Length: 83
Image 1: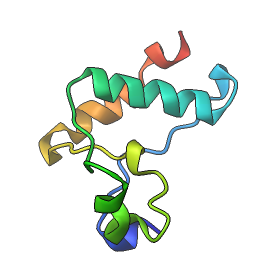
Image 2: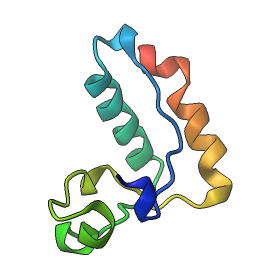
Image 3: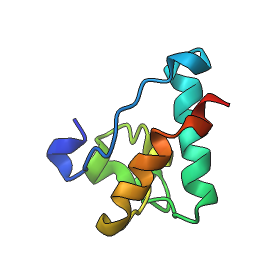
């Protein structure tokens, strides 16, 4: 649903060792935020044209320059996720 509105999926990782994917997703979001990347949207309203009428997931979207994508993928796949 997001891809056809201009989003790009960087990585879809499974964090089975952490117990479930939600725990892994929260871990990765925290790391991305700590790395200094800003949220893609200033608020839910701004996300509606991209995420649809509910705006669901807008706090999971970040502004990440294309040249930084490999770094983010490396973090997502790192062993740190298992700690």
